Length: 102
Image (tube, rainbow, N blue to C red):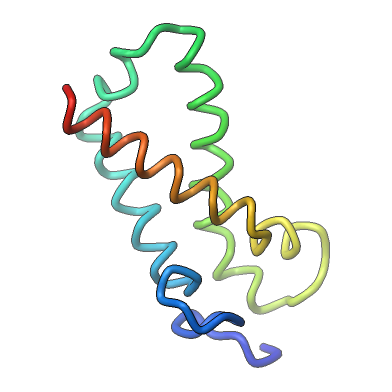
C-alpha cells in the first residue's frame, strides 16, 4: 500500500486525509439526495457547471481510497491531485451555503 492508509494521507493535515474527504463527500451526497432543491433553485447557467464540478469532486473523493491500494496510474494521480481535493471542499461550501440560504 506504499505507506498510505485511509486514516493518514501523505500530508499531516486533517483536511488532507482520505477518510475526512470520504466522509465529507458522503455527507454532501446524502444532503443532495435528501434536499435536491438545493441545486434546483439555481439558474440553469450556474447549475450545469456546478453539477459537473460536483460529480468530479464527489467521484474523486469516493474513488481515492480505492486508488490508495494501487499507487500508480492516471486515476491515482487525478484522485489525489490538489485541485480535486479543493474542488470537493469548494463544492461542499457552495452546497452548504445554498442550503443555509434556501
